[in-house]
Amino acid sequence: MTLYERVGGTPFFDALVDHFYGAVADDPVLRPLYPETDLGPARVRLRDFLVQYWGGPSTYSDERGHPRLRMRHSPFVIGERERDHWLRHMLAGVDALAPADAERDELVAYFEMAAEAMRNHATS
Image (cartoon, rainbow, N blue to C red; front, side):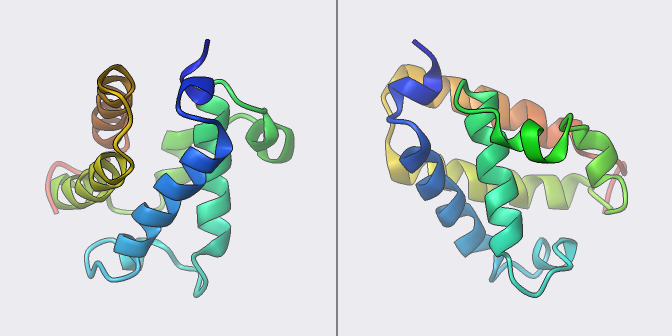
């Protein structure tokens, strides 16, 4: 069974992304990295990516092609500070949803790796 199935499917990721973007909206470090006035499209893209990554429907790739995360994030300065803010908000979302320990551990390990992988500046 996939993590997607174990956490209850798309509703889990909707809630996670809603929690995350609720924090991003008020974060002076991260908000400038989202050029759209409305964070709605970014919410959908992240939710669809996470759903697909964790074993759900392939809507993200069907609509956008290969994720190419580093390329898609390259226009933005992502240093230690941005990484840390992103990770703090994402992990707060995971904690707010309180998945079982095994699922939490998988999510945390992935988000820690992904946050570091998106870093494209030594500091900021």
